[in-house]
Image (cartoon, rainbow, N blue to C red):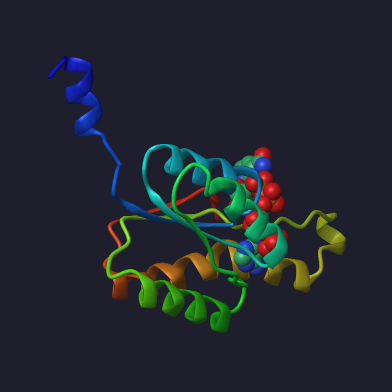
Length: 147
Ligand SMILES: NC(=O)c1ccc[n+]([C@@H]2O[C@H](COP(=O)([O-])OP(=O)(O)OC[C@H]3O[C@@H](n4cnc5c(N)ncnc54)[C@H](OP(=O)(O)O)[C@@H]3O)[C@@H](O)[C@H]2O)c1
């Protein structure tokens, strides 16, 4: 085995299982694509089912990409999504907490609803999805959102 092959095998992700939240577009879709190109079975989730399924269909040319619709801004959404994953996989190796929202307004006019929207998705959902993920033996959890 060449040195290059040894390094490839040492850092190989082949056969691993990943979940990418907000994987239907943007940075999440880029991350999902990267996993699929490296042999990772990849679950993607987001709210809009058509867009999500279209991405999964396109990415399925690269590897096994499964779409599960969710709204992770609510506790019910987090719980339902975690249960859907648990029903399919005994173990998840990588969870990428990428789904996120922003709200721009002057501080004097910043609405509480905007604060809640950002905090529910960018902070609360990450904490509780991670907590629920312990049920399916999560190995690594990452976030693109910095609370
Ligand atoms: N773009 C940047 O320059 C930048 C810089 C720093 C950090 N980030 C962070 O990186 C992450 C991705 O950014 P992006 O620019 O790629 O965002 P984006 O294009 O707006 O994509 C967001 C993704 O999250 C999904 N999503 C939104 N709300 C959701 C919810 N309630 N439940 C489940 N999925 C939901 C969206 O699909 P649906 O709308 O269908 O739900 C979409 O797939 C975000 O957390 C963002 O804060 C981005």
